[in-house]
Length: 211
Length: 211
DNA sequence: CTGAGTTAAACAATTGTTTAATTTAAACGA
DNA sequence: TCGTTTAAATTAAACAATTGTTTAACTCAG
Image (tube, rainbow over all chains, first blue to last red; front, top):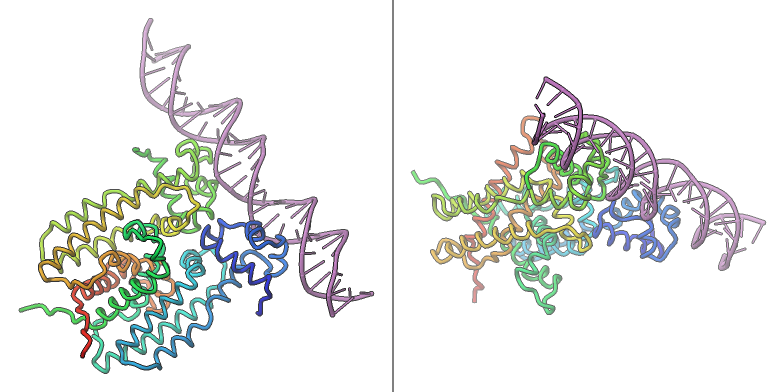
């Protein structure tokens, strides 16, 4: 459960390489070399390459619910809470973007025998809290009732990921210079865009057919 | 340029396996077995495994602009065109979801020496047309001016992909039965949600600070 | 002395690609 | 229709390199 210094170094290197080259594109010897340890140590500590991925995901997907609860119970009106919720989700996902990239890829693969229990549980908790917040807002008359609540999370996270996976394209499009980093862009412009999108969606009233 | 029956069978099998198990997770022998050809035929026809991926992406990312131009030049007001544009993008991306999965993964990998020129060009053309449509709508007073136009495509495609990559989760959440397939859901509910999101965003007026 | 940590070496299996031989099919002139 | 020629298609086998994992010996602090 607890990791010593060497174990967490292995996890960090593995996370980086898995995200860059994929699970199958990364060899345990590569991990060992970059983490500056002997190959056998990976089997010794984690059992196998697959279990190494297990351990990685387990240690990355924890402690999200508490942060989310704080936002929902926190100060401000519904709109403010939506803003805070989006900002939190973007920050969390950006911090763990490498682990999430592995999940995005492997979770849709029926063959891989990795446990996604932690991921799914966290996703489920996350959804329940968001659903609660929005339903309350609807009852208070703040939010529109024509919203597909389960698809709000894909809208938030999907926007981030599509940006992240195509960041080379957007760097060329925006002509990012060295001053403005990807981190800056994510925490300011991208976060604001997603906040705006969700608030717009939650207050959008369907145009009625004239007749 | 043109593919014979055997070559396109190889591409189809490769597309499926690359999407399921990744580029590195797929061996040429696996492709050969499922396509029912000899391993050497892949080198013979395509040169190498990398060039096979090149050829696959080339043949999948073509002919998008014409469809898009038809929508933009077509009938209806700005809102209708936005609806049609979203529907077209979702359909295209859903048809080629396997190829796009490979791109999403590999394009963010700096090491891979695959040519993404076709993909980037198509993405650029796509963006230019969308930007034109929205700017016109803004000048006509139909669309809000507080929209981050480059981030609209990530919102559309990202929502689709995040749904697609987590479809197992959403199947469990919705309790999909056998009647309603993923295809049905994509073409109805998901498309409508994204249309709604974009229309809401494009007509959203920022609340002014009271003071 | 004990047991966890660490190591180089060995293991069999699989990888992408090439080779060299063989089959197939079409084109050819008679 | 005939055998001959030619080039493309197809094959099994071989290639060296790399894969994940295990082993057996060793180090060294407690």
